[in-house]
Image (cartoon, rainbow, N blue to C red; front, side):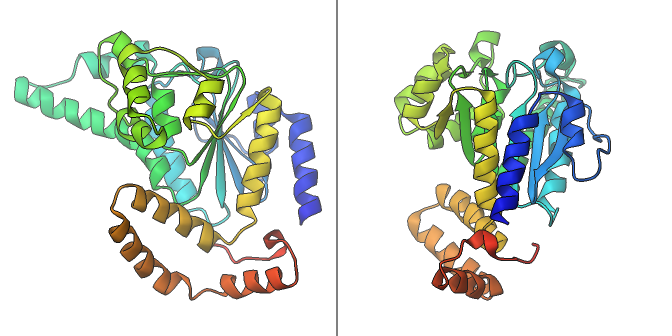
Length: 309
């Protein structure tokens, strides 16, 4: 299995091109067309799903279709027993330019309603709908690795802070752009970024000034865990990392993600209690014995045939 993974990685690195044709050709479904207009879905290796933001001609700006397609996509991934890990990236020259203001203006600037109360009620419905676009990533039990190249602006920061592992290229930069267009970021950045970056002062600075955060500072502050020379190297690294995760027990991996997120939002005592309740059932899996046996035989977990979850 290890040689197969290495072969897949080599093939993936060799044929990586940010085009819809190549992405579809890598799909395990035989190149069936993507059901989405803003996303390209592929399966570059066993148990790995690649979700690519795919509006390169618009710098992957987030239009009205994107906000609903992300929800549909990740709900499907969450229930897909073939998928154990997800890699998210962007097609074209940059990761994303953020919200597509031209396409979204009517929703944001002209909400329906006969009076202030009804306008406000409808606006709240719109905002919570958009919040779900990125919360669905966090709710997905499959770990999500995001790979950022070039610019990651506005809604892009909301997206990546909902992911589990963040990687970027040396030319990547990040910007909380919302104050520059007259609003407070409202779909996740202000809630998640303070829990990603250790410095509250830095979070406040970035959110209040809209200044750019470049790759080296993103790494030193903890926004990303690894920086790569270019996109090709980053995508190869992301796939290799995804392969390592996919090679472990899905019971262990998905349980780990669920409990990491729960513990982030609760006290240590509450997290320990939740963990005990979780593992009182999840420890009753054959995966524990299989993994222990492999360890005693000095074999990699990737040699184990785990059941689907």
